Length: 577
Image (cartoon, rainbow, N blue to C red):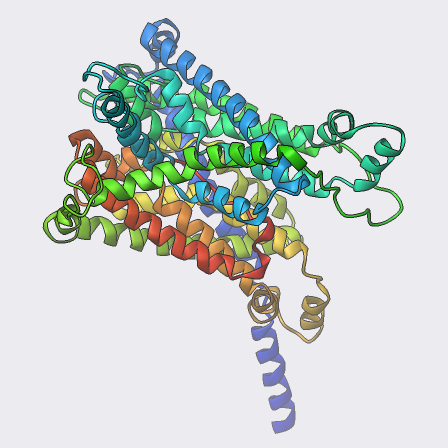
């Protein structure tokens, strides 16, 4: 009897250990992701049909949306701005990608690395850098120009506070999306076809025009659409440049509707067309990337053909240096110079060097310590939570462990279609009510960041899972382990580099977020990005530059760690700003 009892106990223990938690976890994640995605959208729709006077259901907000000239103008300017940014990004990034991927241009590796720096730079910080460089009165470019030619104060060489200035400032930090997609596409173009064109008598330009460009055209269009989408949904740069210039785009207009007296119903109604436009752009981009431009038959193709410049090399180098100077060197130098001098207009000499802005930010400004703590805490919590959720969701979806797992994949990627300002509106309406009372706490910010960054974490982990063969997991299942036990003890250790990479990208994306954050913070929950925006309104550029440099140092440190991980070659970072 004792042997039988022992055997029964062993079998019970085995059943207990091998109990499959896949379905309970699937149900929990389905409810969690549904709440993260559906709840804000529900309240946006609900409030859009609600009068701000509390008179019940009404179409008043939508009537105002199509009749109010300020809202129509804001939408028109936003669409015009985003189209211009997309076109400018494509015009600049496409030739630069070709120079890096398909020519013998010196320093191609360094150029790729420097362009990646634009991903790390928050767009709102880049806009502030161009305030320092191109403001009509105090901008460094105008100050130097007037001093060199002895002109009076009324003479202006460049003015960032214009529509064209806004387009330029945003394009400086969105062109990397086009550059990345086009350069990757050029790397994959088989040289065999270009060789065939040369054999048939085509010169370099003919081959480029009739063979290479048609092959990378889908990547060019997709990258342009991403640039359009990023600029259309951006809040930080338009708020810093457009508002002083005297005009609104739709994101800043929605933000203004939350100022006193708040018009929550109209803000919700104004967010819906922006959401629809975002979904259309994303679906168009997906359709373009989903089309196959060519198919390689017969095995691996040869290495990419490199065009030799000869006497045109210096023209190409001048073009690349100009782009890098406008997008990286000049903005970064402006931030560093302003952080170490008394005023923007002071020359950088030993006599003008000062640490007063650093002393103010680090030791006198009371908001710094709290903002840094909140930013780092939310960055760590968001990165950890999103990576953990993405790991499990990716496993369930890629391995099809549970019936209906595709539903989790759709939910995990759905937030990418929700602009940051729209999500901020939805979260404010969802959690600022008496039921939850989360407004004014870090919890509402954590929910916002998890929702925003979930698609980036999920895409990173799902692509990594697809590269791991399930044989080891099947062996674990044969030996009696449950799916979750197999994931924890076998699959996750194999993917540890991908997990680290996803964590780093989510962390960087979190600490640079502003679009949703601006609607959800209070005095006790300020973040570094919001403090920078507040200081910009008061004109304290020296303190802004110090905070911006600190934020960049943290971001670059994390990216450096991420780049030490070998699997990062195809990863993409989520960016909003």
